[in-house]
Length: 211
Image 1 (cartoon, rainbow, N blue to C red):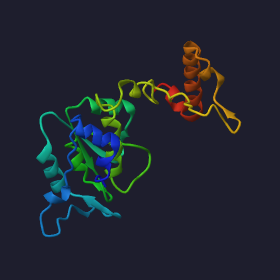
Image 2 (image 1 turned 60 degrees about the vertical axis):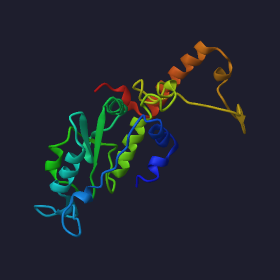
Image 3 (image 1 turned 180 degrees about the vertical axis):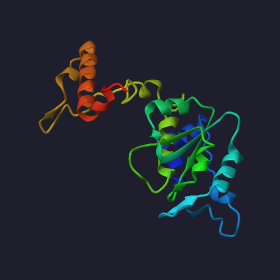
């Protein structure tokens, strides 16, 4: 699942520029027996298989250092946000544990620094969320994108980003707002601020409500 991900332009460029090192650890390599089982039935019954403590924690200890921050990706975590992405980008070493099957033995979470979900839904495993986290973090690292590229974005100012337009100025009667063609930078700034608030109210009003 990660083979093509590391070849994506932004990710591969960050690796080539030595802005990030991305190491993949196969938990199955830490499981004993000829079949290398990393899961088992759930105590108390229930559908699905649960990932065992031993292989997961042995894999974790093989890469963990004093500077490591360990995050588990699971639907039963707190919501991953842009603020979290900035925090992760500031870390020297980030470890992401990907759950699978029915989930992880709860005791594994005792060895993590944080438990996160990318949304209020369930996926087959934590690999896709881990890629989402990697992408959102790597693009924030110095030298990966142009400095200004990550400043005026959705969630950076606590609201959604303003609308963007490009050529042609008139597409089958749908016109670019005249203010963007005016050359008046102050008017454009005010319009973008107003539109960002309008879009946030319409699409994500929860962002405007204090916690």
